[in-house]
Image (cartoon, rainbow, N blue to C red; front, side, top):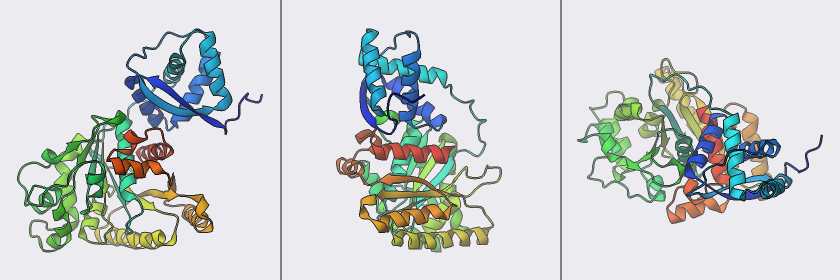
Length: 384
């Protein structure tokens, strides 16, 4: 039987929903590896066939938007009116029905190894590594994971994009903790990231200008006997406090990048791909050249230290098919690699640029935009 609407022709839906319902939907969709728009579509389809349902408390609602097939959206409005319900109540009941019909999977046993460690990197600057790391961390936190986002790039773009100041060069910092030069605890430097449905689940460890000196100091430090372990030792005290630690790495081939790559290795007793590296590229040749250098660096560490580094996948950032053959053929080449896979393609849109301009997290500035949805896809795929 043919559906009375075209699933490919979607229409934007905006409703007022309470924060608790929005959060529950996002968490459950992430747990079940479903797109939010597909979850809401299923809920509306079931709601149209269901008998009248209990009223959902929608007091204090704020804006929620997604996309429904055009014909289905019309049916939702008509049925709400016929049942004597407000449109917002109809949407809320449909979402509540989907949640009740799709229970949370059983929680996994707790990991004794602590936080999962995900680093974002490539040796080419300007590919949008920082924006994807930040967006993915926001999506992980939004789905209920306690997440620490670390600005490990001495340029400090991540810190400043989120509206915070870099640590002063004379202040305690991650670099100083790595070198044994800091007093106090590293957790004292963490800053909560406010706003959105990830609030109370996301923290930032800001960058410091002294990170420019880290490579040179690691080379001569007597405090760190094995240079590659410096980042891990500094972060050890925080690992039991978080579900995920996300590191925005510098575009570097030096010691600092070695420490980050070593940090995301597969530890003894961990399942494959519990932790690892996500490689940010664009659909052009220079990204491929930079990845070749990164891959060589990874393989050198694997061989020298007898470790396993999981390459979790490529994120092709700022993709625009209108750029023609160079973009489309480059994307196809990334996909042909097969392993690591392309886990997401982020479209080139204004949302991220605007978020940076106003110094807001992407999932606060444009929470239901296409780029935000893609960040949720990345988060789901690396947390599965």
